[in-house]
Image 1 (tube, rainbow over the protein chains, first blue to last red):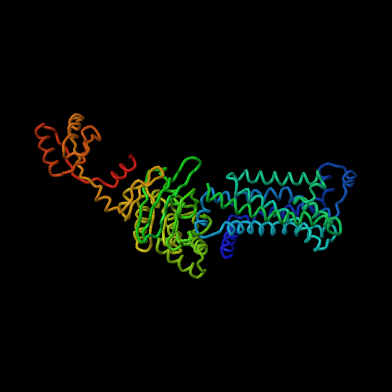
Image 2 (image 1 turned 90 degrees about the vertical axis):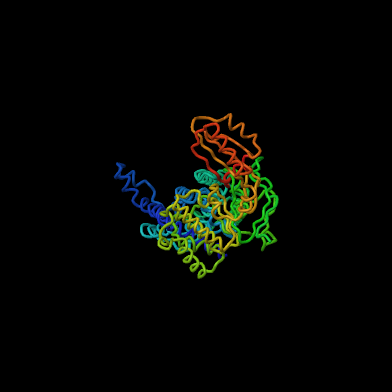
Length: 258
Length: 304
């Protein structure tokens, strides 16, 4: 426990010193704010681009719920890319440079080592997505209509679990692969395949973690959570646990066998 | 009584055995040098002893932990190329490693301060490690290795990558640490081994070929050596004829006109050689009497 805490603090300090705590929240905040503002000024933007006033008025004005949901889909593409790039080297780079030896030569279990890494990623992700969604919520309230905070919070919690799942995938791949680029590419490819399968295969993939982002949008656009939310929620939590156990095992194997 | 006992330790990478069934004992309080050419298996051996690498087969037994559990509590390890978290300061890094070795925050702070002072990094304690020189990093590496006062200190090539000044600093630190703990270090600089070690282990191709007390080994294996330099070109014929003399163990011409003889009886050899050279009217430029060094012992062990 103490080892975990020391390593977690080290992860936090590291992300602060290399400015991850600055630029990742800023990217999410920008993504979150940009969306309601561009939707609001869309007719003006189009007119400035030479579209006639009548045509510009034909563009439907999104509802508050649609706005909030659209931000989530932004995080789902650009946001995931940013997180994968930020975390791809979380284990692989330390192993490559040899700095991980300095930690693992002390009586540190691989489980503590991995859990500290994951906790660091989780806290940063929760804060960044949260900040982005707060920005979206603020401008949506200002420019469209007021949405209750509880709704935004609930959809955020559901959505962020999907991001934590992708983080866990990045962590496992970072334990397994030497090339950090490969880690980012593979984890994004798996996330994309899961999302695509969920929308193409529908019912057969209703357990998929990628369903969580659709469920989160559903919460924002309808009044309450769909009844299909529990299956992906439980499956995702289980999968994260499996990915973490796999990461700890992979980390141990990479050190002691090769 | 030995501190560490290893038997049948083997590590295979694919079909190649990097370490091939070695057995050794480390006595408490001794400083042991692990010697060997590149690729002999020194680093692999040290990694297995420090618990970073699982052996393919064999047992590492630590005196205080017959259950061969986590040895890392009792061992301090410095890798060949220590890599630090460059964004940390020296003090922060030592505090982290002390905490990981299960020291309390208070004890970690005291010990870090004391060690920074001792390895001469007190002034640089608050600077980022990224800005340290190679010698400073190596000294910080030593500090992290002894932070939890380990029973055994394992150092992989602690001075090989340093300039003469850095080398001297680290050697004198080792000299000090020798009094407090048991040290096992690898090196390919034989002079370093001669300078501070009590025991030597020479490895070649994954096996231990020579082991024992350094002074005793030198006494047993040391031989009188005569080096002669003669002006006027190669002496091949004469060197060959020397090999047949009763007092000559081995004769070779190491360069044109330069002859090295291992002899059994110095005084007889000197008398015979000098009179013979005078008779033949050879232009003697240098006549030197010495002893075989650790280097000769090493070369012989490794080539055999």
